[in-house]
Image 1 (tube, rainbow, N blue to C red):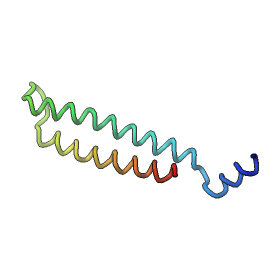
Image 2 (cartoon, rainbow, N blue to C red):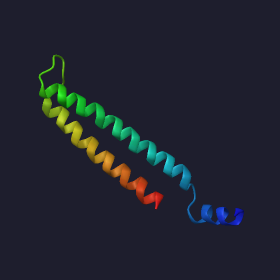
Image 3 (cartoon, rainbow, N blue to C red):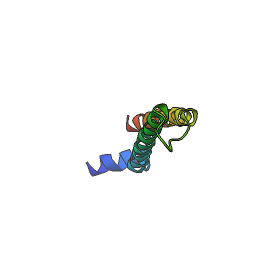
Image 4 (cartoon, one colour):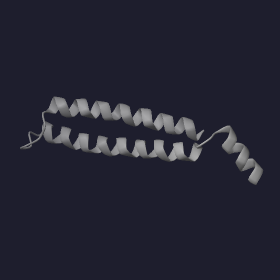
Length: 79
């Protein structure tokens, strides 16, 4: 078992570190998407002090792309 773990580390160095980093990046992107959706909802309902709807929707699009990219990288590294 110890030799097998050493072989896995040689074949894929820092795999666990990458998984933690990319997993945290995915979580961060999901959190940003959550707040972007809230801002878009506020803009849609004309809530006082809400950011403009077009800016909120742009932010939502960027955050969706970030979630997809980070999740894909995490999944690819996990396999």
